[in-house]
View 1 (spheres, rainbow, N blue to C red):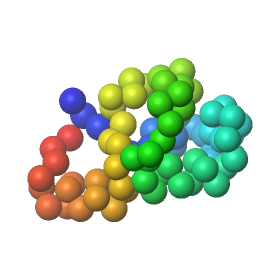
View 2 (cartoon, helix red, strand yellow; view 1 turned 120 degrees about the vertical axis):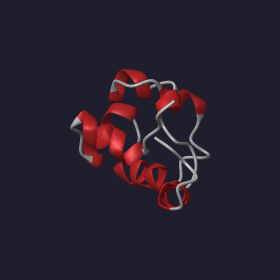
View 3 (tube, helix red, strand yellow; view 1 turned 135 degrees about the vertical axis):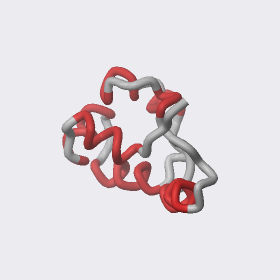
View 4 (cartoon, one colour; view 1 turned 90 degrees about the horizontal axis):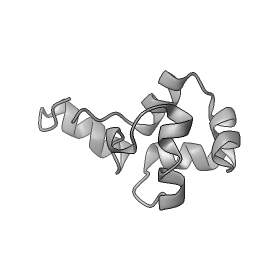
Length: 79
């Protein structure tokens, strides 16, 4: 399955961090934190991804953004 970052999902949905924060019911800085590393994102927030971003939560890479980029760069993760 193709996966994208939380940041890409937000941008593809057309939201700023501020607007995404409002929709998730969290501060925009929490959105920024999740975009950098969403490995500890609460399940109840993960469950909101399909409604807010319009994609299945399985389409989101969960982990560090730096790790995701490294995997893509090294060719160890195929989209």
